[in-house]
Image 1 (cartoon, helix red, strand yellow):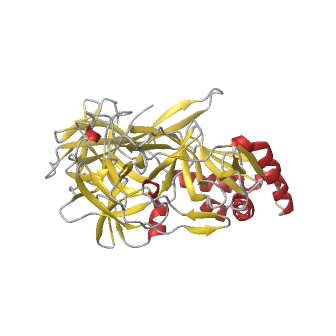
Image 2: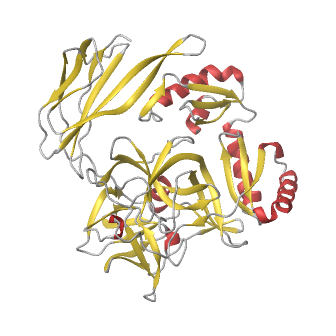
Image 3: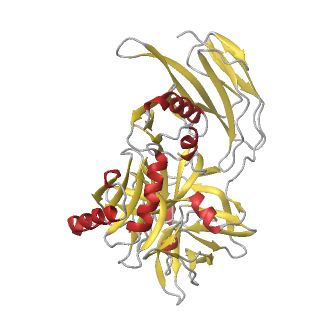
Length: 493
């Protein structure tokens, strides 16, 4: 958001709509061309995602407020209203509405809304830029029951990976609750893992809790930054805690358990997701997001709102976690701390955050980028690329594209991906191109692949106007390679 606002000061935020278009608000129509151009660059760069995307799919809509105006208003509302009054459970700069949004306690909505409006007027803030709606406090999803009996996530794991079950034991040695492991990591040379701080007896503060996995002690609380005063509330940048693992515990850095959808049974072909990158603040409202948790397994949905502050516990002294994301991804008790991520292949993922809880009609996750910022230090989280990249060549075989390569040591299979364009006709008769990115077109154990879509000519490293571009990734169950070189083919639509 801020990147676009610097170039086009009158832009008012952006999001992906249901058709995959990037919708950008513009306060001043004269900046529409600048906003469209820069947004298209973002779409082809930091915001590029796998799957179909219409070329230059940027929609500019009029807006009353710029992003910078709303950001300044949000900061003022945070200090003067959100952390200063009872009955307010969330604060958001809502990209879709082009407004600042406050979620108020449903049981006293009318009374709180009246007090909030009076407070806004007293502070000289624009009441027209603030929308009020009923919303209950976030419900944390730590659990008091184990995963479904007989499921893979309820069985002991030899290595610690994301999404497996944790049993939290308090300082007195008593059972405190079940949660999910977020991600294994090494921080400043200390091996351990991250899960949700609300899974421990002390939210946002040090205690001497331990974590266990089926009779084996796997962690001692090592770092849980203390909450700080923010108005009349107590705040944290993230809902996270770091546990250090004892010697002898195998740590699967860069791995997340990979189950079926709404299942806790491991995928027999690819039992792990491989973390190859970490959130760098490019997640946008409307894009797809996935979650693994020890109770509900794999669920998915889309991001609903970004950078929302949520509070829970009685007022004053409410606990507030700042700048969370919400999505319509399903979660259940015991999933707290489990990883949220986006997909860039069959099991290659970008780590986005940790499951925090639920609000009405949505789940909430704390951003991993805020975990790293709040905790500081040097982190090792990703798996890396431990297999060599294939080197591929192409040819046309009986009118179909064929790619081939030499075998890669350690690889047990190869995935073939394709970028291509399709010419479409609109309802008014104009033609346009739809670009498909990063589409998996085949998996093979051999060292060649022939696609089923006809082409005209092999063009090597040259990308024609109507193109099909192929690349190959080498894999085994827990490692992968970077993508191979890209080879291109032309076709006639």
